[in-house]
Length: 520
Ligand code: ME8
Image 1: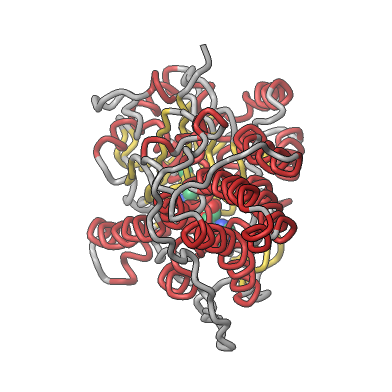
Image 2: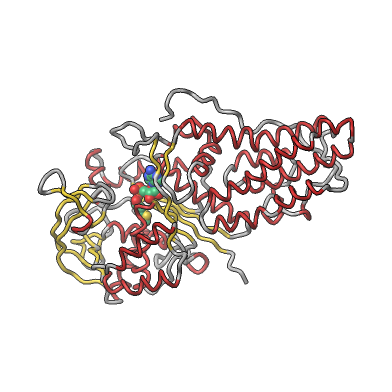
């Protein structure tokens, strides 16, 4: 029998700064996929959360002059507060300072130790606190002074670190990982990330320092609390601690592990596609099915940064575009996996074009004509013409067509497929001109309006993952029962019943005014 469980995760976000467009982006992408899979009949577990240990967070707390736990509590709450306004349907929210998580980290550490993969030595090398990452000489450029180097990939400042450290025998996993990538060609996406990771691993991996001694804001190493765990071994473990692995909480591992997809930003693919599978292999646990990296947004051509004052906050997004509008603009404005430039004018045009003029206008025009000319009931359907059939067949094919895109994390292609039917339906109204048929052929007018109502039902069902509020409102206007809105209802067996009374139609997606003032 087909496995109908689906586990999807976002990165857990560092609490050293406030949430912004980038975090909303990745979480929304995961939400769209989670909602899509639920409607496709899967039992979904969708996890997000916050990453609260490590030197970077400790330094931020110190700067704010508050105790690290209190600092984490405050910022983690801000990340939580962003979820509901953007209609994020996560099933769990994990914080790495929770007991359930710390217990799992310790249990995982012991497994790696039992496997003979951990040893104590001395670390001497370059470390970037901003990235919480170690870099090799070949990954660095000269910095502003002799004590500082710059990580070429991210621009982060690195300092020389020398301390006693536990190491993980990552070097033993070079060949195992390369074989795993070969056997599972879809494990890393997009292709550009896969190629980068494979090339990096193929050079041969060196052992990984997995503990620190120069600060104490972390999970203590079992048996040696002079050390805290390196924040990445701690952070990656969240994906199984949230499922209750070895921590005495209700165990969801059987149902949901291995994860179907870890959605991550491209700069953290290395941690997810190299370290994480190596840890899991060592602990003898199954590996996730996919790690998919989203690209990076810049804003009006500039990297978002506090100093430039161009950080787009969640509040700005909501004010400018609303919740559905933000979700749509973020997902439609750049192909998932690519980098992109977030431009206010372009987002407004996209929302007006696809939502107000596209789906909104289709629903408003059709439902108003039905209200006016068909006594507010679902019209009669006569014999379907070939144009009718073509449009309906394209609508009925959507679940299958779009699931392929969503499985490949091509979220923009899923949207394009749905909006291609919206475009066809708007063209169909113009071509059929039901307002003319009213006098010339009222029976045919009824059939045309029926076809339109049925296509609106289909595209609105398909649009629920991206526009949870707007799509629902349209489905309410078709008097569709809440339990009849899944992809299994997207066929002629569940087609609208002629004669059913419809409520008064109302506009769903207002047109946005383009303020000349900048969005950020
Ligand atoms: O890296 N464009 O946390 P983080 C697109 N705690 N996505 C962006 C973005 C942008 N401009 N800015 C941020 C960490 N993101 C670790 C993760 S997981 C076990 C630990 C998104 O707070 C993107 O998904 O730095 C990126 O990977 C993530 O936010 C970084 O969040």
